[in-house]
Length: 311
Length: 277
Image 1 (cartoon, chains in turn orange, green):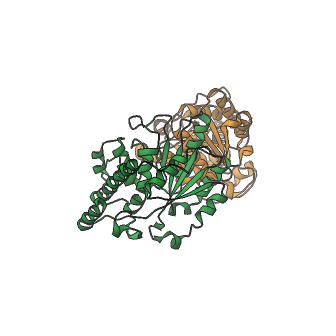
Image 2 (image 1 turned 120 degrees about the vertical axis):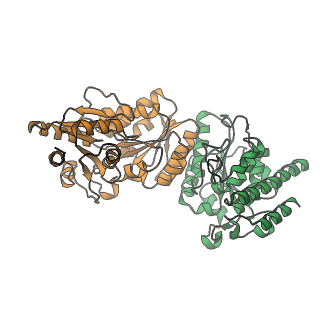
């Protein structure tokens, strides 16, 4: 297990070695987001913007308009909610090559409480036309995603988890923006997940296997543009879907999947995620249980959704 | 003492300004949308920049070494479109499409659609940060280009402007110049009544900027200040240009009632007559 933020910080340094256009902007949280590794290695390409996220996004837009590949990082709450207008008008509208990195996503932010919990960052960014959203499942997928960000021209929002989570890509990761990856087989139900909820979903799938229920697990790390084909195929083949995300169920992965199903392949659906409540500080394990997002909650959701399948 | 600009050059620029002002009034009249007052106040600054100061090539709008101009007060779109067309970035006929569906000339500038537009603006307060990013990129890339940002006076009520002011001074961006179009009128009334921004010079000085004050309609002063801005200095510079909202049309001057409405046939005729006299 490697902390996902560590993987991000190190991947950014590696990227900086090979791509001299990569520059990094920080809003005084670099020691937490781990862009400090880049700052130490490439001080001339690192810009400390202070606690001023709106300006940071604008400066990133100006750098991108001049051929640079800026990664602007802060906590997900601060880098999406506060400069939403700057992201929309200065970055997305002109389609500039800015990579926005939101750290400490969802519930898991080191006991800093609700003010620091990004439960609506995906909803906000997903409603802005033209931005790709990536929520990597583990350290390895984060490493791949960082490189993919630089290879892709256009605005990207990259979600960065704080802590160590079980690895799901132990044998390497064939990451491609916009493509879901199936991680477990099963014919009875499909669990579509992103971010750290993929490892929790795999745990649920193993529990279900012992009960004789085949739960397919699909890692949907690109939330926009969503892999509609993979969702429709899963719905056709398994007949029921459970989504699992570290985010409010309103506007996040569950909503995105529901939109695809509703328009193409209406199917029984159950969403696991934060159920539109404000949260509180606790350990990651405690929070998973309290907010209904543990493996056993996913197992329960699977049982329920299978009952709703048409006979 | 600096040299006075050649009188023939001043007359040439003033003639262009007159033509641009007629174009602004015509565009807003025809489209029945747009912002006349703030476009007329910023006209002389834009004409000075595009016809004397900026190192640009209309045939190569993406030329790496060009000077950059960010119109942060994006509602001055009719002014910058008229100037870009006159300068040859696109055909003047395009101006007739302003405000019409499928036109590349949106009511606020779109960087992706219009050659010569450096930043998509319209949500006030954002352009100075974008300009700072461009100035920073010049330093990183070892480029000598200069970046200008034109700010509205009401616009500097936005907090982001002061974040950008702090950032530019902190980074010692000596290759950026802000120009404040200080016409003292915003949508709902006088700036001093809506939200006082004075003393503007003290505010920028205290944020670490060099400040220069000019008459924003005296072409000699405007051109000289903008050209001198390219000279060596240690700090970012703001040129505070004293201007008149609705400049050039008597009944549009210094009033918020011409911030964002279109003239009637009769008003249009009178406006064009005044501008051509």
